[in-house]
Image (cartoon, rainbow, N blue to C red; front, side, top):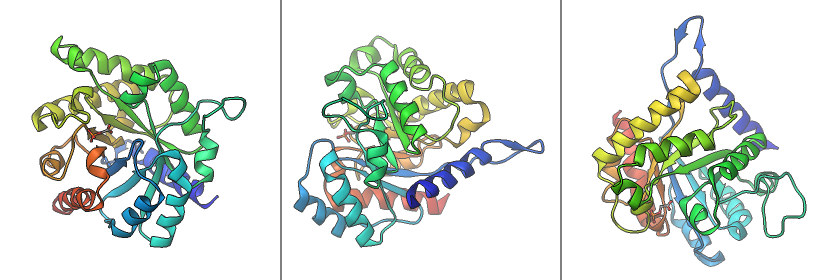
Length: 279
Ligand code: PGA
């Protein structure tokens, strides 16, 4: 399938860039992403309206993650628009197929045009009791089928107040990335206390935490960690995007509420595109 070959080549290039060639370390080439997580929002009409209005940018990878029933129509709408926009699921099951009522496999996601999938979002951890072990199974399954997982990690307010942020993130990272022999994934640092609350993390805190995450990634993956994009998520919007985009370890944003309005989401894309042009 056209899309799998594309993502295979993209992944291969990313892997090669992460290796040393003839003793020469190649420079990191991290991709900037602006990703929309629509959660359980929008119907068909609203989706069509969104794709008519939304713009894209050659400097930023834009990915939309609609709810499951809108994936295939979204795929068709993106194709028709001719815009370079990626499509992602919001969840995936860990099994190839079988008697799992209500679930969606990675092959099903790629079949309807997905290249990405969000895994381990805090709302799934909270409401569907997903733990690190399950997140890991889903990540391995997604990678096996050529999807790029967008792996979400983040501490709760209680954990933050108890100064346990690094401990929590370390555990989530080691759990999610167990047995991973690939750098075909994106990380999203989403402090739970910042999601949907309007209380976004300060840029200093986000940068500091992203740098910590990168140091853990380096322990796990070595030099390849340099090429893994780490996105910030949690009340990211058109007003705070510029500050995040200026931070060296923030490679984009995962946007919930502010991604529902095409105009607002466009403004966020433009901020990150400008940041890329200036860098
Ligand atoms: P928010 O959600 O932007 O509405 O805070 C982000 C997310 O949950 O991915």
